[in-house]
Length: 88
Image (cartoon, rainbow, N blue to C red; front, side, top):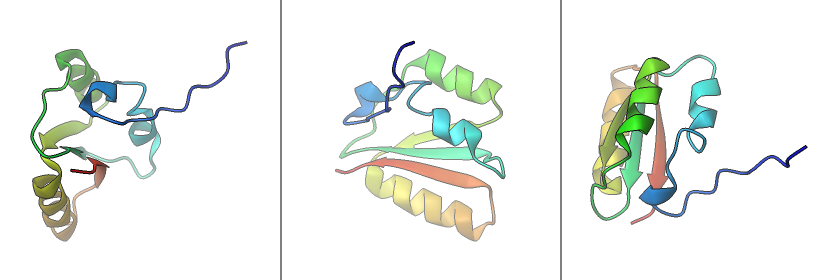
């Protein structure tokens, strides 16, 4: 058997369906995932975003400072939200 791989994310290039698997397992289920990609907004692979949408999770990609603000705003709105943040 192959060993389980820990999804280590060091940059936006490491963000994949596998590295986002934890967010699909959360209970209660989240509706929005806010991703902060560091100093600037980085493009994620369209397939990754599509697969997350198919799981019922919208993904919002922003630079990390704005992602933190968006996460706090959505929490105050009582939305089911989670954040994945790469330090700037």
